[in-house]
Length: 125
Image (spheres, rainbow, N blue to C red):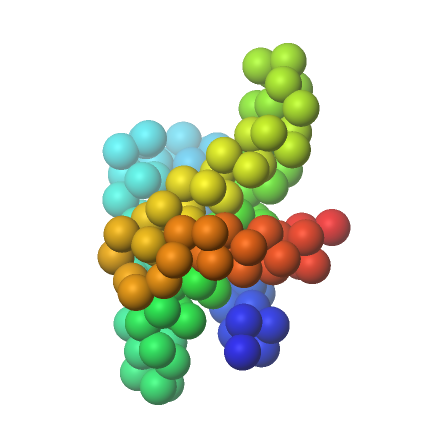
């Protein structure tokens, strides 16, 4: 299920996020506006999936994974700036996403971490 959802969610989210990033880089959005637009974008994606019968947990997993995949280059750049291995920074981001899923959905944090990690490896390369 996660793979099928990622094939749908990832391109949809990437296309919409790219437009926001371009506007942010052009100075049309400040940090606060970009964060607000990004949160709204994620919420709209979640609602779109729910209207198509995707469970809350599966939708959350797909959206968290898509965000991790799309931000992977930024995580790697941040790791380089901090002088840390990219794997550690990426693992921390995945751990945070897994903790969020465990807090808001009926999923074990370790199970969420494993699922998210698998998706990031599959789609993030």
